[in-house]
Image (cartoon, rainbow, N blue to C red; front, side, top):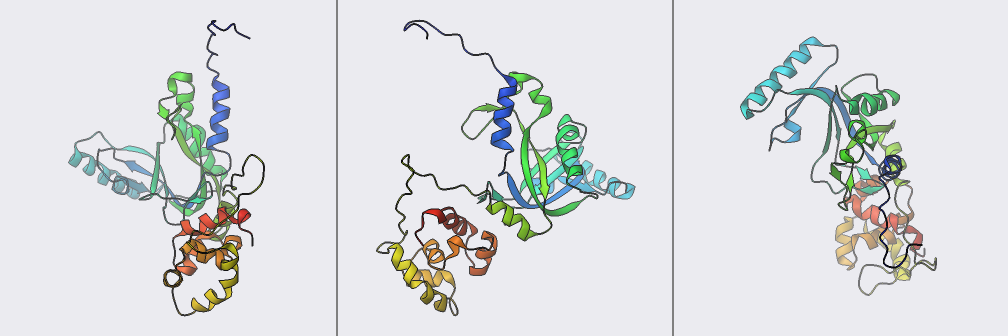
Length: 292
């Protein structure tokens, strides 16, 4: 133990410990589950240019397709007076129905992940992941889980390569999106995503906190008792109208209907009742502390 007034030498930077910590946080489980498109083509990098308008996909092996895409990208680059387009891969994760670590995303738009095809990030991370997933032609469309790994070029630089920051402002290596797995259909994707949903955090004594409905004046037993009645109401009215008429929140109506412990994926439930998928995800997360 150091003496009270002694100074201690900071521990040296441990690259591999840092990588293990990042791998656990960024790649393990969770990730993004979404309807994705994977394509190669020409990317124009210009400030203020929407992502959806700056990438021109090609069909590998099709010379005509490649010439058309390159000509379009070159023309756009000239309009914006920026450097020549770069050839690479783009993974697009569609916002609608997407989840991140099992919770519905709140993105304003789709997410786009680009990597130049000549980089180590493509050669070591992105390319091999797509091959391992069984993708045999591009463009490819389907449901997939995306994970994130440190850019291999940056982490080879050690601490100097930590030029990015995480949500808490901590320094980290720039992250590269890659394909963890692909799903045969939407239902399989959402079933897998549901397993990622975080469990409720219990108090230190290990006992679940008493759950209360969001709606004023309602108790858990009230919601349980009114479930059958709400089912009848929903035969002729939308859920949001029923909620308003009973002075209930959408989440509490879902609980009364038993959807907090339902078997359908959150997106399917949201579609069934025409409500936000985030409301379904919220009650699913609380399922273990709802007493019925």
